[in-house]
Length: 113
Image 1 (cartoon, rainbow, N blue to C red):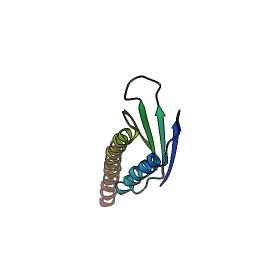
Image 2 (image 1 turned 135 degrees about the vertical axis):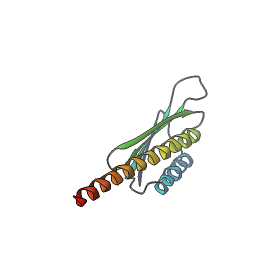
Image 3 (image 1 turned 135 degrees about the horizontal axis):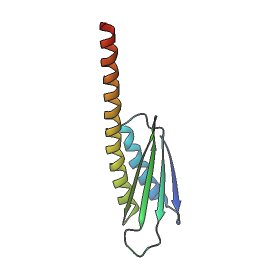
């Protein structure tokens, strides 16, 4: 899977980029048809502690999945976004399975006529 990381309003260090790479690579365990991912790291100009935003767009066949989290650290925001994407992948796989099973039922019922 190809992962593209963009950091906005700051420069991301190699340690953070490696962390993001490892976390997004783990999504391949749940869905093997992932084409790529785009990660946007933003540093918001607010006085609040939770000023770090991680947005992840997962590119899969058919449509894209998206998660956005805001936390105190980029690592925490990325963790939460990855967990959200994992849940979205599970929902997507279930939807695809139900469509396939409905299609098989229709095909087999037409063959009996």
